[in-house]
Length: 64
Image (tube, rainbow, N blue to C red):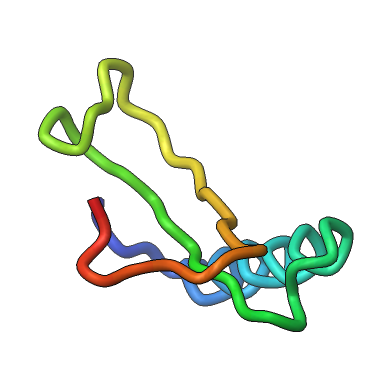
């Protein structure tokens, strides 16, 4: 991924959406984990960008 001139604006928009989703799903108050996977080693067969908003339960570390 190559950084671009508007990446800051885009990233702010993504995390605004993450906040809205976590509030709508009633998981914001307990905390959320935001995950994105990129590339074949991450399990992608078709290159694209998306985010998973995980919450509502205790999570372990390391993930996966």
